[in-house]
Length: 146
Figure 1 (tube, rainbow, N blue to C red):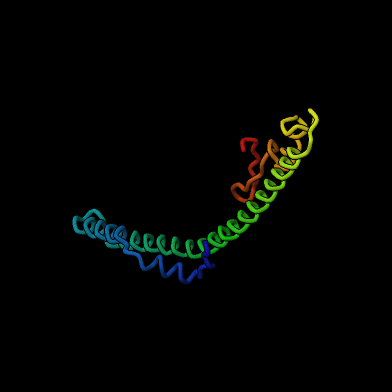
Figure 2: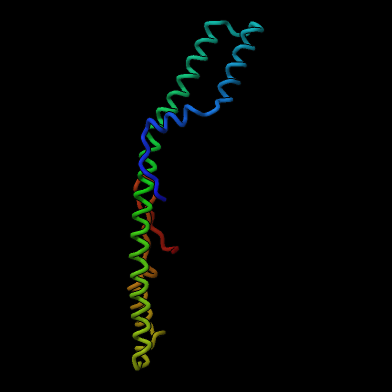
């Protein structure tokens, strides 16, 4: 889809620019707890400190992971287009073989519906063979369901 590789600094800036209503709600809850005496100032500062570090860690993680994930998606799209082109060529070849067999004078064993003709078409088009498609973590998923 034309995604360029994203700069981690851009991802960080985009994530930091968001309106953070949840952090404001957290801060309000801390202030309320302090005002009614159920949370002392030291505990409030510690909770706030760790909440902020948690958000910073999430932003850093996203900045590190998103550009690589988008690049992997881009490469996957390119590979899928190549695989589709190969499959299309295989199918065109199979159809051409079937049509050439139909155009020739046929004996019973050479008819387009004969087991030999169907087997030849299936072999060229890989129909009935298990398919391999990418799965999680680069593993292949093997299926006879295609």
